[in-house]
Image (cartoon, rainbow, N blue to C red; front, side, top):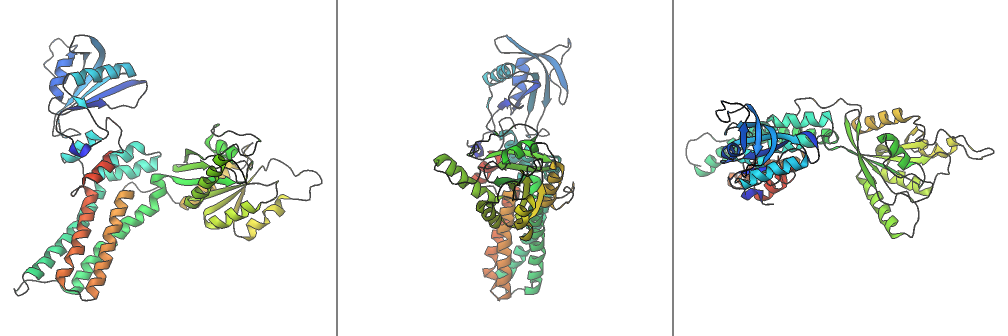
Length: 469
């Protein structure tokens, strides 16, 4: 895909997800969108005067050979007030795959070409309808797994993040202009920034960047989902717990050790908190190459996790692997799940659940007793998972501006430049040597909004979109 080289011809695509549905949409955008629609569409109204803007027109879609394809509602949205900033036509058809393919094929034969993924939104960006943060927010809105993620995406779609970044960049640009004046006209009587005034201006922007970065860290789990990894010995009940949390049979459960040889990942909505729930291979020594690879992946995932659920069979001897895993992840990132509370200890057993879990209590690990089989204790476990990840905090405010990973990396880069610049000023470096860092910081902020838009950045942003958006 080379979306950065997109021409302003007419593009078309199916804009609704694959599969059958009540309604499906074929979208066209570009200079020929209206003429294509007028050739394919015939109204049911006797005195039809052509497609009027921003109205739904009921009628029929025929291909240029006269074959009837579907009964539909057609909407025409002229540029520059449309989503893309160009003339846009949407054919609202019956939602069957064959119908939509036939209508799309007719639109393409009439002069359009197939749109690349994200090309409609790319054109909206290029035509000034959206800045780059808003374009990314479109993709984040589509992908939002929970209401909280949707709230964060909508705040950015409103343009709030782009406006804040622009404000901070403009403050730096003002400092840069004053710096250039001081360097270019050192002998003229012009108002010149003192080092203290320079530091004050830099400090204001620096704190603004730190606030945005703090918002990224604070709300990362709400936006991207919290990586929560189920780990422990074989047959401790990890897969059973995953199925119980999901409310369906996702993982295979048997008494055979090593049933789960690779990891399984599923999305879980935990009272509005998106959770990436991962079931990993059970800890044990094995000669099986596939299972060994799965165990290595499991260990890697536990080091990356926001929370590790260490599943322990409370009726089995605590293993060295369990202890080693707990020590590697630490009490802050580990919640010990004592499974099989529905079972009583075998008669004449010398072991007791209390004795087996003493080590965790003494080492400062929180434990929760559950039965993955009966569901006992699951509500309490879900509550503790949520509280451990977000501290019991409320969902993000509707107006909170939260950057994504790409944006936060650019913010971090700009912050590094400003912190280095403060050191340079304090060390008394000449003004003519300070402008480079200021310019670099400004450029990094401009990449966030798309005012400076390298092709690689655009490819990365719009390549995330589906075809038709």
